[in-house]
Length: 452
Image (tube, rainbow, N blue to C red; front, side, top):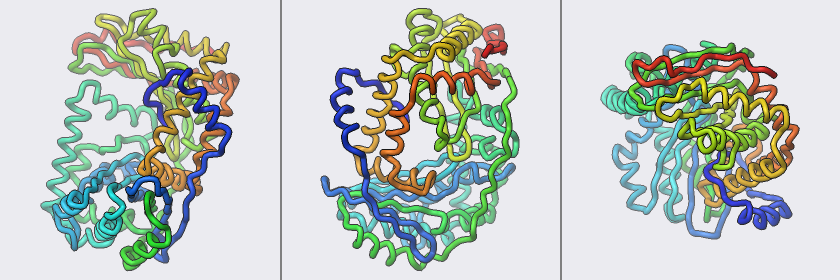
């Protein structure tokens, strides 16, 4: 669950009171084909639309040192045509049917989805099956080189030439040990992308883009029996891939670290980062609520202290990023012109200390829980939102319908929980990154001892 914006408590309270009276269920059927493909179907006949949501259980965290960027590269290659749907037929056929599609990559998974009128279901599934089973014969050096260059250009735009973009490149290696799956950025490195051969790319596909490493969710105006029949027809001939072993990363602790980066920016920016927990950990909901109390709304503590009352920052954000294996918590504050980041750091640390000592007020806690819950419910109002969440729950816990469990955990967060997680995680050693305008190192923050 991620916060998008705050709705007023006056608007939220009646709706949430009713929501708590009825348990939230998203009915589904779950099947596994002989080749290992998992199929989840959710019927929603309210509107004649359908979405297909394919998760391959591979992300940048499955790559190896020296061979990074493959998962994201495949997000591009999967749209370059397959044996029976050569480029650019994938997009053209879907557009002609009134449907659209896209994909995304994280540290843990790569997803591909199509959405459109329910009449386009067979086309969607046929296209997904063709690129799962018959993409490899069409993959050649010109395609790989073309998409490699596209990814490199994306890297330049998002990391190297984007203001403050260099932080996303250096922070993973500061937060995680060298061998940890999260110690490099999702997009990979320029050196690794350049070194990747066609054979390297094909081997990656053979290992991870197999039916036994994928989960397909079909949601919308469909009938489960009909979906199962179509999926068996299109996907059954695709062979199972090799078994995949994912050893758990070694435990580690973060050491207090301070790094200063000069960038072509006008305003200095401070990043404070702590090691926390994976998304399914019992402390994840409390950390999410704590992030809202700190910086989720105009009335939140750091927003008031830094932006409105103190007038030393232009913006501040806080978020807990729980992933499948691990997690981290970040506070980002952008200084007003000429303001040193030491000043921002002091204000942040003072507020963390007060929150750890006194906890949130009853109003702060209710506001945070209600706003996060409202955001979560808005995210699953569409069949596409439910489909992606069903896939995420299944991959994380093995139970696709984790909706009510998440709400129960959120509603169960107490003021004491907030105090405890702030003390345990946000008053621990951290990685601090100062981004300052070129030639203005004096604006950088210096690491200070945080009292507990």
